[in-house]
Length: 85
Image (cartoon, rainbow, N blue to C red):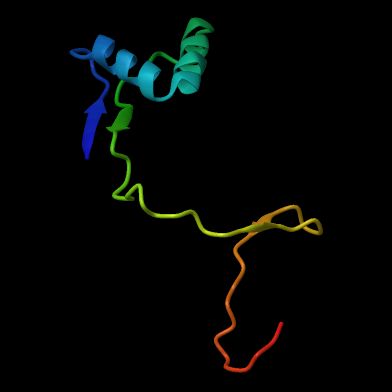
């Protein structure tokens, strides 16, 4: 995993990477800076791809939306033998 930390020596490179990887955050940071709410992103760290060790062959876990609570849940398998749902 490669990381890039924003500093005076690499502002252009950092901004370019941030705009490419997380354009919505780049736009927000730009607006906050223009409004005077932040001085900049000095010290901010970007983790460059690959973000995880996850392989492309891994399948997403099955989940179901609960209408009662409004959350997504992963169905659990019963570990008892001869159990029925």
